[in-house]
Length: 109
Ligand SMILES: [Zn+2]
Image (tube, rainbow, N blue to C red; front, side):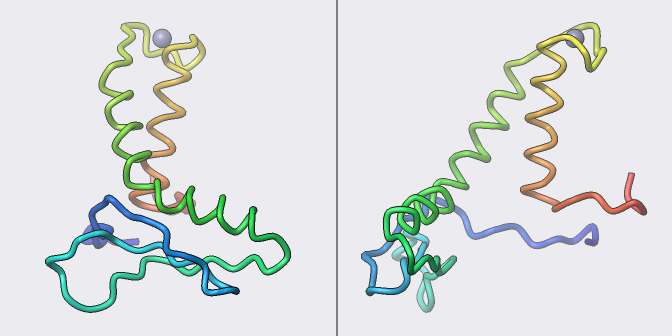
């Protein structure tokens, strides 16, 4: 990862009708020409699981914004990482970091 990591396609995203084997997660920007596909979800064994996975991926932009909004609302003066509020802040911050920058390697701190 570098400091100029690209930003993801802005939401909202939506899921398409299944074509029998794949469900596509697409962005909803009608002004952008070209390919709107974000992801193709495979799960031939269970269409219900396939649909649930696609729904989760399609909700990612809203989930990221919700995590950021929640992080702004949780304040704690102790900064202890063991109280419930600090634990929730750490959980949210970690999820946001994973979404925006991926897993931390041992070289990153
Ligand atoms: Zn605390």
